[in-house]
Length: 579
Image (tube, rainbow, N blue to C red; front, side, top):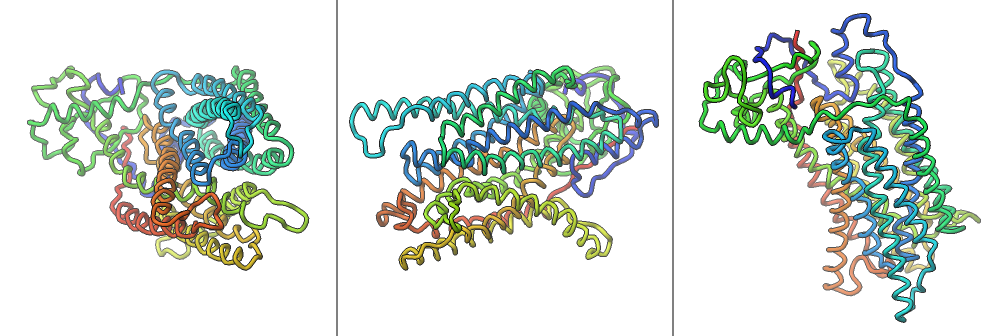
């Protein structure tokens, strides 16, 4: 925020652009372009650069899901981990891969830029994949082996495999934080045509993610379980190697932007300035608060309008003889602009919405852990074909694509006819529907587990096909919440925080997986103390996984109620265009 820290004081002679629908990425830019010069609308970007980014995402998604989809099975069957520990380890790794993007986005915005962040991350990604493949190639100790040589063999394989696993988590997290923003950088902000193309790019980017999930969930998983784990991981490694080579070859076509400084620094400046100006009195007229525009800033660049909540933070923008004269200010740690203050207010408003996303993602994480474990103890035969439990994740992804089509082409248009004013569902409402569907997804999984245990006692195991309804419902929850939440956070984010808040939204997935790991470990230990073997033993036929799902359903109910309260209080961002 260096441009905000200095320069001449400017009063607001402006018009308000109020975004009442929490618009998605691109809508705000398109509105701003309406005031641009007509000749700017004809500029176009090179279509080859976004195409390269989309191809890289296909390869990256295939490699990542080649590990994630079947990780819990590998730890359980090859590394001989227990049911609860396998699920916990898988959730920890999966969560780490979604925690790294917030760090990667900060580093990209502050120091490296998106291009360099992607390049370094791909190198780490490839190195990690090589270690994973080597670890899978090493001979595995037998499950009942207790000799010293077997322990040494098992320990070496664990070390190599998990070193590669977490190098991969760091690499894919860095790619995830910078690849999408790098793709968005390839479009010209001054062109309405490019604004529309960029919106389509975001949709295509998600389709590429789906492609990787389906491919890995079918081809790679089948190779891992029916041919060789080493070959399966080798395919994923080849994908990253090809992605890195393609990225280097396509470098001359990519448009790169230099980092503009850390938005985190601006947040701390507001906090410090608020306390330093603690004794100053807020003016009754908010237009007397400090705002500045750099001479290099375009006339139409948006500023954030002042809001009345969190008034204490407004003290950071108070102009007085103590910290400001007509020509200069004493520094950004003494006085901040209204825009800087409002950026921090946006973060505070988003926190409750973000926090409820953590508990929601704890439910989503069951697809990678307990859903797969539940499927492995069901009848996986459909005729003469054996269906790997992990492959049902591909069905869930297909369902997500179906839900996306259903929501965009049927549900949202239907709401326009239902509402008297012709409005459609807001993004906050869609997120709430996703939170609500999670309750049903966990309840269906619990009910199925009850029936599965009954079928085991009767000697006729249930078919894995009965898992499809819970995957279908959780796909709807993912469509309404995960996708919309990314759009909402990006749309509500100030211009200087687009990458950071997009990564911040991804952080809910990381913390949700951590929460899932913690709660499954806690429940397994506590219930084992109450009555051996507990709810989640190594032999699920002797446990009560259904009780665990009912606990998650109860947590989802509380989470939904809390979300409804904070969503009803949320104030949407107001942007200002100087004229």
